[in-house]
Length: 129
Image (tube, rainbow, N blue to C red; front, side):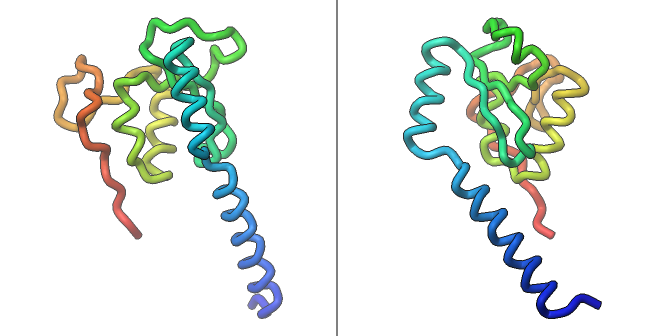
């Protein structure tokens, strides 16, 4: 059985980890820079704290050329942005893993399998535990 001190130390470590993650979230300036880079060169690399530091590429479309150093990174195209924007962490991790394995496009539930996601679709919801 854990002592009160061990429980308090664990709680403090978790609090510090969460605070650190919050400070790494994009600011308005970072978001504006990412949007500008996406517009200018067609891609932007993001280090995701939700995905435990993995680098993810956001690209205008599948034809955008990216530097060779990012060739192994998972790519989300603009048509998928609306789907991943509202995902809870667990669902985003599952979508990321699926894209890494299958190298495909995310589609909304109910869409034909050969149709890329539409920006107007609502993202899937997570169930709370």
